[in-house]
Amino acid sequence: MSLHRTAHVTALLWLGALGRGDVIALGSHIDYWDKLGWKDPLSTPQSTERQRRYARLFGTPTYTPQLVIDGTREMVGSQRETVLAALRQTTPAAVAPVAFATDRRAVTIGTAAAAAGDGQVWLVRFAQKRRTQIGAGENARRTLDDTNGVESLAALGEWHGREATFPLDPPAPGEGIAVLVQAADGHILGAAILLGS
Image (cartoon, rainbow, N blue to C red; front, side, top):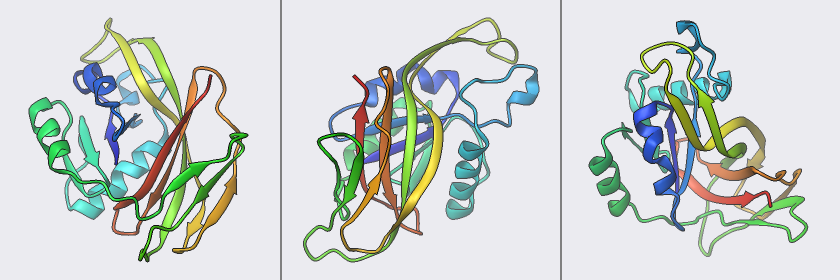
């Protein structure tokens, strides 16, 4: 299972607690709040565009804090009990198993038995921990402690239901990477995480 959400302080305060064995919790910071006079160092146009794609998929407006589970459900990220209940109801099924090479320089997307489908393979690079002083806006002068804050998102290629291998640079100390396989309808078909030592 993978979990994504757009950043807001109230949601960030407990994002790290979601990092269980069956959850990949990633904090994607949108950049449209940067106009308030303070640039979030983790905000990227790619994260904003990803949120807009979800908005088109779900037929909802863009808002923060938004949380997306498995690319198929969205909710307000600061509503902790709602999020935890949704996670309990989600049964992950790896249609496209993701495995990193032992040298950490490649990732292979496999095929589960009787699986079929197509998906985009995404490489997400993130900072495992980051502390930032907020300079302006409603949270001015607060300290932001991020867990798994996304720094970049890039397409590695396509997966067409058959085993495929993609080269990659391993994460540096303090960094991490996640590889996601996502169908056109938003569903996460497979995901795995690799942390820098």
